[in-house]
Each structure stands twice: as structure tokens, then as C-alpha cells.
Amino acid sequence: MNQADKKQLIAMATEIRKGAVEAVHSAKSGHPGGSLSASDILTYLYFKGMNIDPQDPKNPDRDRLVLSKGHVCPGYYSTLAHRGYFSTEELKGFRQIGYMLQGHPDMKKIPGVDFSAGSLGQGVSAACGMALAGKLDNKDYNVFAICGDGEIQEGQIWEAAMFAGAKKLDNLCVFVDNNNLQIDGTVEEVNSPYPIDAKFAAFNFHVITIDGHDFDQIEAAVEEFKTVSGKPTAIIAKTVKGKGVSFMENNVGWHGKAPNDEQYEIAMNDLNAILAEVK
Image (cartoon, rainbow, N blue to C red):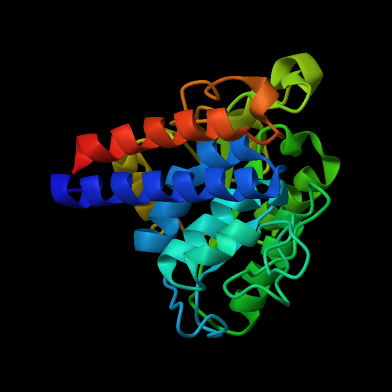
């Protein structure tokens, strides 16, 4: 990836992080930590990696994205808004009565949303269904799913993984946002899923491990996925919870709470400083 493209992606990911923080601050509730850790993955997929068209969000030939960890929708909504599915002004109405953007994604009401996420653990199953449908319909679209590393403690994730491997769904790519923190502490303290890579490999996945904030590595992994035949792919993305905001980074307390006005200003200053560096 050339430097100009990389700078554009970094700048866009930073704008997306700003939108996520704004949404959570406006709502006085939400999940900023995981939204910020997944922002670079979402940015790459929506601005470079996926075949999508915001003007035709239901195109049957489009690539699909399933946000299995649906509580990090502030980052997802900010990505969709900046990509042109709806106005960024909608972010200010997050989780508020009378506005479109709910506390979890709703595919019936929000343009660009392919899966209504709620209870954790269900997204890979839905993604498998979409991927299998593509195979049966002789379509060449890809399906991407984003899971949390705490979420993969759910048994249904592994039932779906077994199905994906058995059915050789090579049009399915599962990202694990491995920020090592969940609501109650580190993933090891709560219920260790490690080694994540070996577990997916045991279910007949092609496995790639990357720095989830390095756009070169994200791009290389997605391009590698597109060359794999006969196996689904799992990309284990090592990330930082709260990435980009000084007081949120690697701080489990920011899994699910909103910044106050003073913290909001600090967060925006942190993110604007990153923008200034890349522009």
C-alpha cells in the first residue's frame, strides 16, 4: 500500500473514531472501547476491502459484513455514515428515542446493516448462512464477520466454526478483534480462549495473525483470504481497546461507559492530534 493511501485510511479511521466517541457521548451510554479497537478493520473493509455500494445497499451481489459483537455499533455506525449510507448527523441521535441508530444494529431500519446483532455469539452462524447461500446461488460475494475475543467464549461460535470448516466456506472471513479485554477484565481472567489461532485451525480454518491497527497487514490478510480455496479464513487481529484515546487505551473500564464533557474534549483533542500528524 502506498503512503498516500495509508494516510487516507488512517485519517478516515480517526474520523470514524471521532464519530464513535461523539455518538456515545451524545447518548451518555454505549461501548467506546471495542468500537475504537475495531475501527481500523472496519475502515479498511468499507473503504477498500469490500465490494459494496452505499447507493445500492441491498445489491444481491454485494459483499456482506456481520458485526457479531453488536454492542460496538458506535464504530460501525460511524463507518457506515462516513461511507455514505446515511448522514453523520445521525450519530448525535445514537440510542435516543425517535432516532434511527439503536443500541444494537437493526438490519430492517438502518441502511447498510446486514445483520441485526444483539446477543453475543450468533454472528458467525448468520455469516455461515450467508456464505452458504452464496455458494448455492453461484454468487461470488464474500462474507466478513467481526467477533470479540471475549465473545468467542460463546459455544455457538465454535458450532458455527465447525460448520464453516465442514462445508469449506472459502467465501467466509472471520475477524477476531483480539484486544484482550472484556467487560469483567482480561480474557484470560474471565475464561481464556487462547490459543485462538490453534482453535480455529483445528476447525479447518486458514488462520492469519496480524496487528489490527496496521493497514498494510490488514490489506495483506484480506488479499490472502481471497486466494484461499476450500477453507474459511480466520484473521486474528491484535488490537488495543480504546485505541486512539489516551485515557481509554487498554483500560477495561471503558468497555461500556460514556465520557463526560471534560473527557469528551480530551478524547477529541487526542484524535485531532492524530489527524494533524497524517495531514
